[in-house]
Length: 252
Image 1 (cartoon, rainbow, N blue to C red):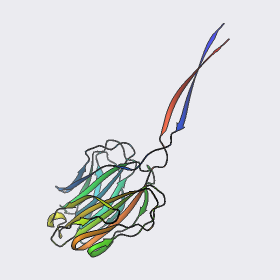
Image 2: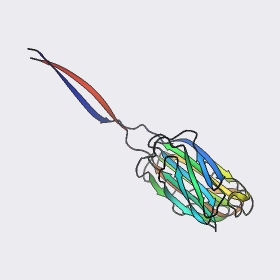
Image 3: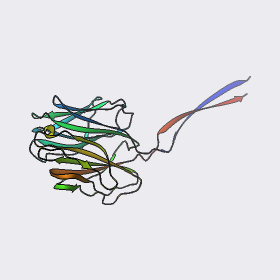
């Protein structure tokens, strides 16, 4: 008598990542009706990093939400002068399909702006490597954040600049290896307490950075200037893929 024996083997293996950090897009938003909405043209895919840089007026710190109901982590939030808020938040390992991030202005505020970015190739847990802490403040035409040293190769660096010009627009410029990826200038009404704006800057680096800082510059002297910095780690492992293999044996 002949028997047909079919053995199905299912194996799992890890495929090393060839991931690189890539910014999918950066979008901007300005206040309308007490909220600031940054709307993505391309929805997120699973595991991306979302970063939001914001500035608004209001007697109480703003709150945040997105189209998927996710919770964000604050890198910093500071009120450099009365009724004004500047900050940087992020969501690692984002759900897929996120189309917008919203800043809700609290405490009678009505003005503000935000820059939202999303990235692939970032670690999905413990993504934040270095945080310069509360941004450093200065007046004049240049100001510099705290210095940080990254702990690994291949990181995303985000620089944040805030300026206020007592009734006139700020005009920011990137310095060194930083590239400005977004700038929002909306005049006196921007924060209800003098003009100004925000600038978001970026570097994607392949080697460890030692004592790196973000320097904001402006064509004219400003007051209440703030510069911040944060770094995020690249994903270091691959995705796990599932393979199915079949073996057929014939026995008696």
